[in-house]
Figure (cartoon, rainbow, N blue to C red):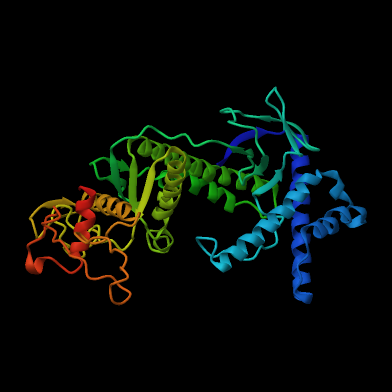
Length: 436
């Protein structure tokens, strides 16, 4: 599999000017190519091949007085801009056709000169790593790299990024082999929240770090200073850098915490189950700032990426699962509860539950049941897998299969009459098959 290894780089003043020139030329080539393709499509619904487009916006453009300065930068960086445009169009068509999962991807748009984040990619022909640890970039020179760890293999490409805080990074794409962790027997369910970041089914609680909330005073001071500077002045540019660096410290701390927490969870558990939260919808409520600060989406993505590399399993149960309404002991669905209710007593068995701990145990049971049913097992308790119809049987469907009751299958059956609401047997399967 391919991974990215990012390192801070320290270009000199001359190299920063060369990088700024390269960023600008790559942006111009991208915009020229996008304008040419849009014009061709509007004219006769035609698509310009990549080779013809590269010859028009790079090779022939260098011979014109308006684009003669394109020859001052590496052609490899300019060609990478065209590859990025091809990838943007491919993602759009894959999203429209349904081949790409996730949110709908729109058509590529023109890049603005005022964007604070700039990047350019070099292929194997545009960079080289020396033995002294320096990174040689075509027509830029040898750049100092802050190596924090060795690369596992030779990189196939490198992307030089300048973020909004003025920091430079080199992101290498390397090919690595998955390193599976030794198997363990423990599995855990996680209930994510804001008061506590995560409550585990084994009773452990992970506190919410609240990185943005803790840095609000420093951010407010920096933003007030920025608002007092005259627009277009150099002092305003300096103040903007200070604000960007303050936000970058918060983002870096949050990202590092997510990686460390995910690594610890996957190292101690063979499988991790959590709820498929609608983060984008929750981010439009009055709790938007706290939801963004929690970064549940990033935490889940980091968990899934690390699990794929170390041989662990990460499962997400449906967001409609009534985890806060279901008793993890008798599996009676006890109805909706306001958010201020943190403890409740089950009407079926009388057990007193902590809301978050009970929800994590229900998530664990539901995730384990879904994992068992994924290979094609029975969905309901005591129901056998239907067999294929024999030729001597009438019709196209097999005869009705004998159904064993829950007690015959070794699963406790609820005896509550009106206390057992519709849909409870399905929840019972999820819980008992998970062993919670």
